[in-house]
Image (cartoon, rainbow, N blue to C red; front, side):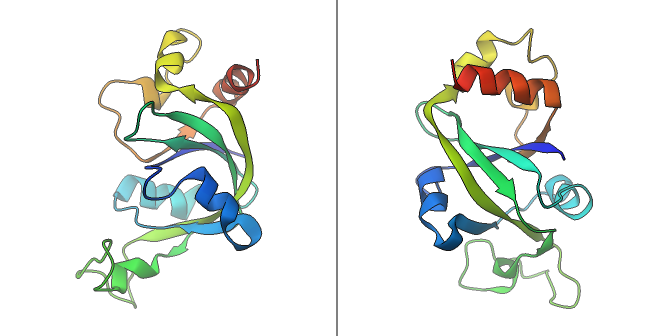
Length: 155
């Protein structure tokens, strides 16, 4: 099993939105970064766990956990001219973009804010979210970082 962090803006798609979906499951669509696309294709596996991170809000932070429940598959929004994620260069026979399905596991009583994560930079050395210039919406989480952050979430 691998661990991930997946960022979403809560006014676009929040952990509460995931919890409210049928079977508490939704496709993680709209990712338009080749590095993340490759992770969805080559590394994401059903059963992997992901921290759900609310970004571009006050305060940003990890708000809960989701489980990956599918392998990567073509993101249909790339073919939809009405979608914000439409990519006219994508072809159905050669899709450029992938998504995975995630399922709600739980919401934390208190978020683990970005400021809190940065306060523990020594213990979280190498954790991409606290590194300067890190802009990926999805990133791997090392097992020791996962365990440490869980302790921060449930003091």
